[in-house]
Every structure is written in C-alpha cells, then in structure tokens.
Amino acid sequence: MNLIAGLKISCRALLRNKIRSLLTMLGIIIGVSAVIVMVGIGQGARISITDKIAGMGSNMLHVEPGSLTRGGIRGGRGTINTLVPEDALAIVEKCPSVALASPAARITAQVVYGNLNWSTRVQGTTPDYMTIRKWEKASGNFFYDTDVRYATKVAIIGKTVAENLFQLTSPIGEIIRIKRVPFKVIGLLKEKGQSALGTDQDDVILVPFTTAKKRLFGKHSRLGRIVISAKDETLMKSAQEEITLLLRERHRIRGGKDDDFIIRNMADIQDAAASSMKIMTIVLASIASVSLVVGGIGIMNIMLVSVTERTREIGIRMAVGARTRDILFQFLIESLVLCSAGGILGILSGVTVSELISIFAKWPSVVSIQSIFLSFFFSMMIGVIFGLYPARKASMLNPIEALRYE
Picture 1 (cartoon, rainbow, N blue to C red):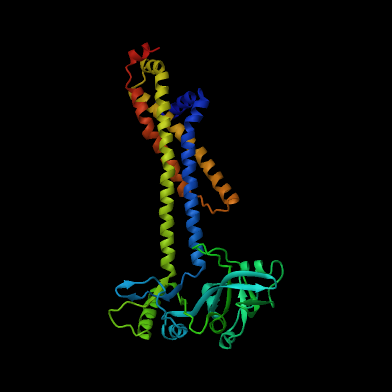
Picture 2 (picture 1 turned 90 degrees about the horizontal axis):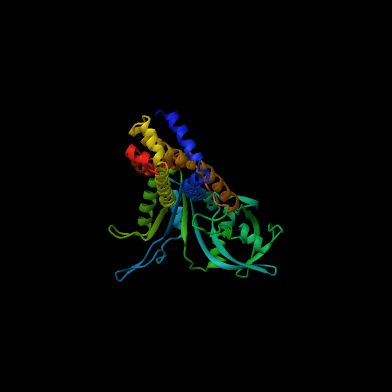
C-alpha cells in the first residue's frame, strides 16, 4: 500500500464517523493550543521584564550600604551607614570605567497642594540621576547643578503624583508643600509605568540632594545608594572592581574584612530575570503537554474501538491479499491523520487565544514559530506512539477468525 492509497482509505474511514473523529481530535486540539498559549505567555513575560530592566539602564550599577556584624550576628542590608555623597564624587573622578555617579536618598512624605494631599516617595539626588536612569521629561525642565549647589527648593514630579495633586491642570510653576516646606514644581516626568519589581516608577518626586538633606531628611540622614553608569556595557566588570577598591580604601577596610557596601549589577539582574522566566516557560509548557498525552490516550482508546468494529473489514482485506504491514500502515496513518488535523486546529486555536489575551487582558503574549513547530511535532509523535498499539493489534488478527467476526 502506498501513502496516497493509505491516506484515502484513512480519510474515508474517519469521515464515516465525523462527530466521533472530531471528539477524538479534541484532546489534541486542546493540548496543542495550551502549549502555544503557555509558551507565548512565558515568552511575553520574559521579554517584558527584560525590556523593563534594560530600560532602567543595562550599564547601571547600584552601590548600597552593607550589613553590620555585631557579636557574630550579621544584620540585613542597609544596617550600616557608611556611604556619603563624597563617595559618588570620588567614584566619578578616580574610576576610569565610570561615566556618571549620583547619590540618592529618599523618604516617604505627605505632599500637599491646595486641599489635596498625596503620600509618595521623595528622592534627593543630582541631575545626573535622570541621565543614568534614562528618565525623560514630559514638560518643564530638570534641575541643574546650580540647584544642587545652592539647595534651591524645586521639584520634578512623576505622573502619578501629578494626577493625584493636580488632576487635569498643569503642575508646572505650582507650589507644593513637602513636610510643610514649599517647593516649586519645575518639571513633569514622562510616564514610566511599573518597574520589573512591580514598583510604580511614576509615584515619585525628585528634589536636589542638598535641599533634601537640609530641608527634609535632617542633618544626619543616611545616603541610601549611589547610582552609577559605566562608560560601556563591556566595562561593567572593570567598573565594579574599580569601585570596590576605591570604596574599601576610602572606608579604610583592612584586608580580610568584609565590604561595608554592596554593588548590584543590573546586567546580572537582567540575566537572572531572563533565566527565571525561561524556567517558568519550560514549566508552563510541560504542564500544557500533559493535555497532549491525555489526548493521545483518547486517540488510542477510539482506535481500539475502531479495530474491533472493523474486524470483518480487516479480514476481507487480508483475504484479498493485504499484507500484515499494509494493515499496520493503514491504522497508523489513521492515527497520524487524526493528530495532524488536531494539531493544525490546535495551532489556529492557540494563536487566536494568544491574540485575545494580548488584546483583552493586556498581557504580552509572543507566539513563536518554534513553539508552533514544537507543538505540532509532539502531536505527530503522540499519533505514532498511541496509534502503534491499535495498528499492531489490527495487523496481527487471524484472517479466518476476522472473517467469522460478527
């Protein structure tokens, strides 16, 4: 029996029971569709998180206060206060791989405008901070080095703050009060949305670092972190080593002692996030593949029923000259036709559901060619594996007993 003849016979047999064939394919349709949707959701989440981290600056480093060890007990991150604004200046001047460095310290404070108020993050920093973080203005201006030098009372606000204090009016030029200190709004940040860690990046007010220290944080306020950008992504490692050597020297840390600061590399965070999302995609695809196996069991069950129903037909075919391998080939083709048709319908269903999720749930879903080919390949494998036993059972029938079967 050649392939064309086998396909014709299989299609005629399947079309005799259209509803049963469709219900048999349903498991494969759901399985293939689930694999495509789950892989699409996982890949969409990975790309979204990677893009958000890259948007924060892939060549960015954070230096944060380290932990304090007392009596053999190590405290958590930030339990020691050793970072000072002069560290940021020294890093820029003495580390050749560093382009910019900006000190940053923040508090949560109640901000008042007219009869409206809003609790938000107030961050003291320098103009370089916006360049390092790649933040852009929607209107107005950023503050300048002179504002930091003379501790002027100016502020740049995020979109969330503007919506809650100024609603539909422009905030530029208005006066807000932070801890009863008046600040003039000179700029509005462009909307950034949520960070990769789920923080609302628009719920923030930026003020000059010196102003924050004198007017808001108190004289002995701690420096929360130093934000740094390397000159190039390839210089991240050398920048990290230079900063470590410099800060150990400035903080007079002897050899063998632990650092009193922590350096966080955004490239490492990006790699770790991408790796985690890749594992999540594999887990989701594996869970979805279970439904493909369930669909394969359904196909094997229906194929066994079909062999029993067509025992006399098999006997007649053997009586007129069909060989064992012809019967095996015929039923195996029937199983493959069921799985391939189910796979194609599953692909169409999966692509459609992924698009609907992107549109209505606003969740990024990326349908790749690899996931389509992979799910279709597995559906065909299911057809071979679960169709082989019924096909072999049909091919091993005794022709005489098969002809006697009623």
